[in-house]
Image 1 (cartoon, rainbow, N blue to C red):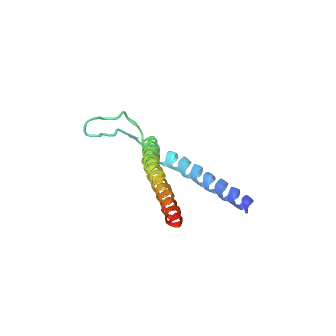
Image 2 (cartoon, rainbow, N blue to C red):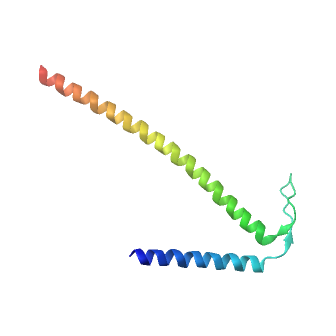
Image 3 (spheres, helix red, strand yellow):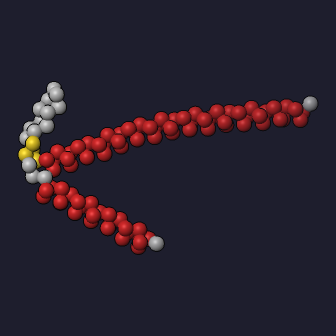
Length: 99
C-alpha cells in the first residue's frame, strides 16, 4: 500500500511538471498586466500564470491558517468550559451524597 501511495505521488508530480513545461512552451508571448493603479512590467504569459497560481496558493494557505487558528481557539475554549462544567457537576454530586 505504501509503494502504491509513493508511485501515485510520483506520477502526480511528473504530470504537474510536464503540464508546467507545456504551459511554458506554449505561452511565450510577452504581455503587460494592467491592474488599474499599477502596470506590471512586460513578461511572458507563462510567467504571469505561474506567479498568479503561486500567489493564490500562498493566499489560500494564509486564509486557511487563520481559520485553523480560530478553530483551535474555539476548541480550547469549549474544552475549558466542559472541564469547568464537569468539576461543578462533581461538586454537586458529592454535596448531594453528603446530605
